[in-house]
Length: 538
Image (cartoon, rainbow, N blue to C red; front, side, top):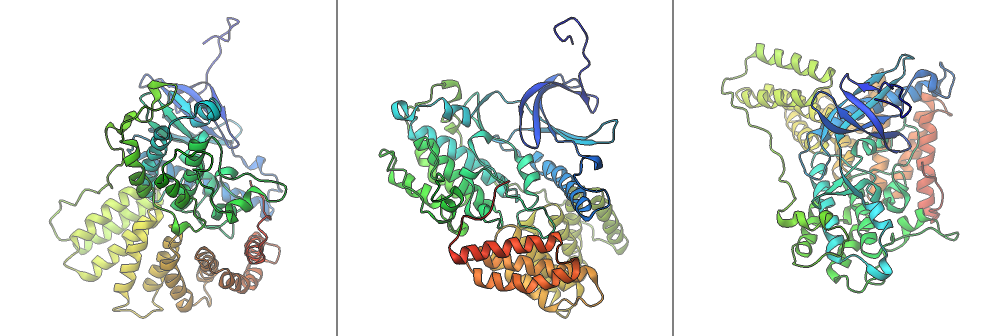
């Protein structure tokens, strides 16, 4: 390669094969490049995350703040890699293909995560909306509904595996040649979100883009698939009208509108919108997450509109989003292959299975561990307690892999089966209630989470066991989150106030844990007092 003056310039290679050619765009935490895979002879997109090194931490090396930041960076990196592998397993046409990922280490010791993906050729919705004049040539309702339906189809697929995007907005949606809609930036959203629930130990931050953020995101509460539906509702409103549903003013900040203001009717600025579509948008913008439809329900509601013959008003026929509806996009739920093994699992094989599963989990390969355990459970039907133990291990592997929906129900069933033989204080019983409660909390089911978490807190004994004491405090914090999510702020506030002295005794009055707890208390107090203007975005 030459730089235009005849001088040779060496281009950077990742993993000895991915050549970085030029920048496509830069964000707060990453930069995306176009590049080339020298081994497979194809153009690719390469995303590089901000390098991390101990020298970049803005604190004294041995200070508690530095330890917390470095621990958070390490957790984020592990979660990013694990979640990218999950995303790579998705086969929906509306998600960019993931080719490879890894870590690049520079001579100075700094490390940088990278992700190689399909190079897309198309236009983002942000650029399309910027070029559209709604007052004189508004796109058709069919055009808007087709884009929203395709996004809903993608969300239905990823929500099945407990992935929440967290940042649905025009800049993260692209329409490519053929009219197919691609939802972008799953990896970055997952990395920045670092879990659905607020954590006592995490640096306080709100993930999302203010005009499209759900009320629960604005309040720093649990982020679930319903949060994506709210953001999609904001986006669908904008596709239909050319403007987002809420704007902040000096009298009422944008955040307060998301939390308090009723959803505006789409038919006010645009009278040709069908009443059924107006009602759908209103339901997607419901303040209560549990009142919003699922992604699949949104898709089904939009399908009659997008399969009705009509001419879209888009300017680029090659990127007409109605074209893909010659075939339905909604992918069926994926099923794992059933075991073909017929032999009974012997005691020796069971011990080998447990050792292999432990090694796979320690090496961050939960999918293989889950497959081995599913086969083991099928072969252990002759021994009820062995089968029960393996189902317990299977639930733990699913939890580790982030498959919270499957893990929650399995932990609940296994815990109930244990209680037929064991007392409530038994470690097996308590482990199941603890993980079932936290898994249900992760997927936004407070009615399921609360009984499990309360059972654990009531029966666990923290005396002389630091790990159990930590789990009890964390569980009580999550109980408060679930009470707040289910519309019981008074009970949530009472629980948080009861937890505060426990955290102060364990970590210190000025610790990160206590400071984050105080922020939760203040948010709940603001809800009770009707003051929704406090808080900041990050």
